[in-house]
Length: 628
Image (cartoon, rainbow, N blue to C red):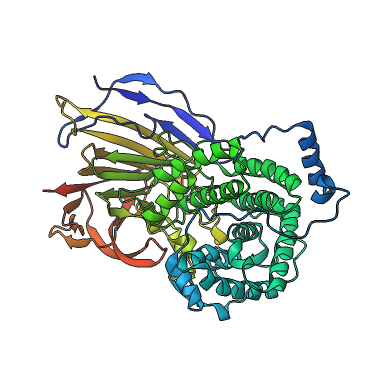
């Protein structure tokens, strides 16, 4: 007997944050559905899933400590130096590292080879090392600043050649950086070099890749690096709470903990860092393990931080605290939920189609073996797997301004792939703007029009602000997900998953609510959709308003417009053929752009259905079907 679960949840964020109103079975439930051409019916309800928890910050308990360790941690937090707590009557230890860490994540070999040739390679951009202003007087694009000042490039250099060949390159770049940053500011804010996030990544990179910067014959240089490392760790002790966002504070606390493990007299710092890190993770993650920025790139960063920190524990023959192991296990399923059939990631919240081997390497290094997130609440991305097809659907409000780094107005946008080939995509790449992706496109890539959804009056459903932040707009998303079955059909493959969602982003300005209904057959060969505009006030307004339905197509798809103007043929690189049909309105083909696996711009095409809709409402149906 067919079964369907129902769920009615209203999950609200802390204080005045956005809300998700959900009904239907939880994410990942395999259900039967409908047959094309047959009247669908809802499967009878067989039970009610336990309501989801409120959209609140995750709560993690700090490690249990004895009275002595608690006092040490408390004293260190008050500012008493570590040596005074661990060995008050002994001579100070010389700066050194207590262990050598085995890097858990390999860098980009091409970027490392470029460093040996004299330039940084960042998202396709070649930037001569000699032209970089390491002091931060001349600002660089954000992704370039992260790589340069966060010393992400050490991993790339480590992957490029044997150590003896790359050590001189690492020391040369490091010497130039130290010369430009000899004076450590009292507080964050003096350029990107001294933001908490970049500083945390830098300290962690120096500790994990220490052989690259401490293996040279110059003893004076080695002493200088170790002294600067100790001073920077003390700077983080004082300033980590001033991090620019929650994820930056996680990076800072991770570096503090790693320094406590690998520097002499570090026990008080380690205890202090572990407690701070667990608290910072609680402020950064939702209860389902998704970062509150809702960005897969940020999700990968959080995982990578804990993976590198775990390697520091292993180097000192310690075990990662159980609370941090639990957080790491929580972080992986949401990331897997945004994977397409070829293993690459969907382009959401400024992210790009990260390569499958990068995602696989990160998951393998985490040691977590799990499946994609099944019960979607805070993370907000609905995932439907049907045959060889995967549908991703943004069914939640955008992140709050204080959490967003490259926030996008993407509510009710979708991505769709079949057999590893992307048919419908979002442009993505806002977080990579400044590489080959021009900085001037950054805000455009975050706009609603850069996503495969409906746009009213060329306006964003949520206001897109500078510096990655978002303003007012979508505050609530209602969603209903259920399985459908067709009358008289019992064979597998003749069913569908139906998702209905709506958002209020256009209610205040235009008095209309956008509702999207998606229905994907269980064999993955047919995706039906209907976009509705519904009046939100008691009396509908008069007049008309412009609308545009946009479907950005994946790379390599050849497009042919039907003679009647209502259909488009799509020829995929694997030789399969799909047809797109619009129930009303003519379909036009326009140029678009897509960020590839390195965040580089790739020209693509988009299907656009546009016209004037009544302010009293309207509906626009469409169909995407595999032929043959």
